[in-house]
Image 1 (tube, rainbow, N blue to C red):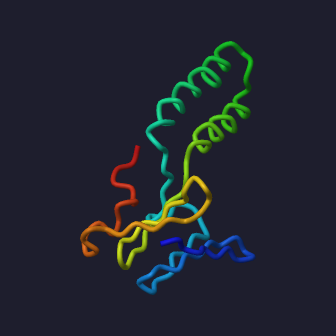
Image 2 (tube, helix red, strand yellow):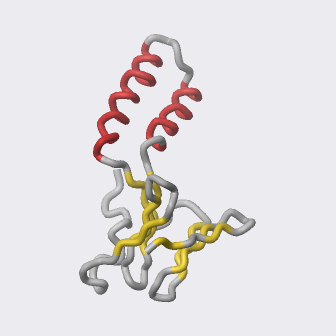
Length: 121
């Protein structure tokens, strides 16, 4: 199922779910939104932070403010966004081609909060 997401003028993303619910993304810290990093890029994120940020700070080649911004860019580069419908549990994931793909849970009564934070760091 290729789903059409709606972006409003106020930069609020609205994803209509097949169950009739509307997933709304207009703020930060949402329990039904996550950022997916493929395993192929996971360790590269850490290696790049080590070499491009930590080593550069240690060698005096990067300021603290520049390090903050560069770290965010490194972490965000391989990620795609995903959302979960709180009513039926379907997952909506940005695919590599920019389309929104939908995946249905095996048991729609369980796991409707799989993207929510379990423990804080």
